Image (tube, rainbow, N blue to C red; front, side):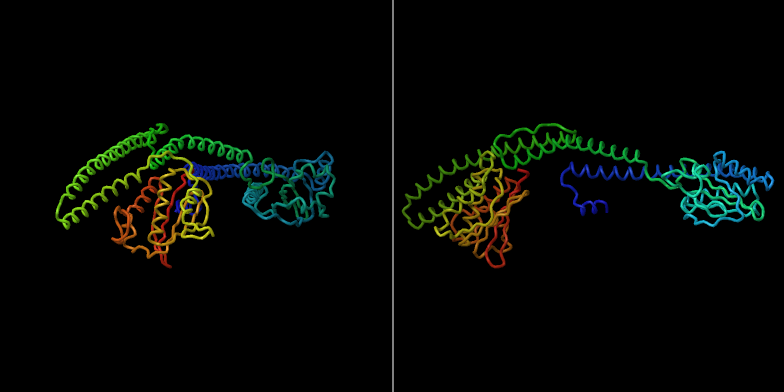
Length: 486
């Protein structure tokens, strides 16, 4: 499923790009999982610390409640006034004749944990039957005293230093406990740092920067490593391409990289040496055959001339002509497909212009038409490419009367299609026509080697020649030559 997703997502074609993409996905997955686990543990630890701080604050509130309960009723307001005049305490404390009604903040996991902890501690101290409320209120909705004064309407020395943390304005914990009928103790407080805001924080900025920088350095390291490891593979690809183009001088591939790449390079060097030796021996063999056969054929012709029976002489001459044609065809096939040339930049536009020029009329019309142009030169063997394309054009003119050429060129390949106006080729023989000496009609001229030679030259350049019958009549021959990053 993962690989199907990557294919649909247009995975990079290069080994370096794929390795960097997979490494990036692995880093993101690993960092996401580790960060989620770390953040979960951090929040659990923070929640435990928050509950402990809430319990500690509840014990301090309980001490305030016990102290005020120990005072006579008439002294309680006086003590509170003296405390406010002295600069206040940790809490904002007041005595009201009724509980103040305020808008409560929405409950969250952390707020509820604090409320439960404070309520539990105070209930254990004041008793379960005492009326009490514990709630969180925003600073804007906070009300103090019976008159319902807002926080901003009080002197700064009374409450601002105990209840404000500008500019954060954290939620305020308001506890109201009934001391006696008609008297309610009001306590407003803030939670201690670092639990003031009560919000669950995401990843700290330092942690995010650590993840980003570590990912960048890891990708950079992997990229340099893959670039270093892919260089031997690129050398192998160039060597294989040069071998397919049939260079005369077999240069061994430079051995380097990992152990697997070294083994492949050594195997390729061995294979290139064997192929070079085979081609050399093949050329020597055909040269010897041509030399050895021409002498007896010539000798037989002389003896045939001495025959008195003209009919027998004609039969022997016909057989010798056929034998000589087979020998010449085989030698031509070897000669035309085994072209020893250096690889160079070939101007395909100029090459095609030279091939079709003899068939153009002064008015610009003729038996051959050409559409499209090559975008840039092609690296290959110029004479071999000329022979390959010339054979395709000659074949179209010989059997299809006219040839219509079209070029499609891009970064990946050069494609030449040659359409003719002939009868086409039976579907069951589309591949058979590439075989040496095969001809659809016995009256056709030539050795029947043109298409086979063209395909062999295309194969030597890593390309292909294919045939297709056109619906409107005629045959389409397609020459596909990959550019291989030239």
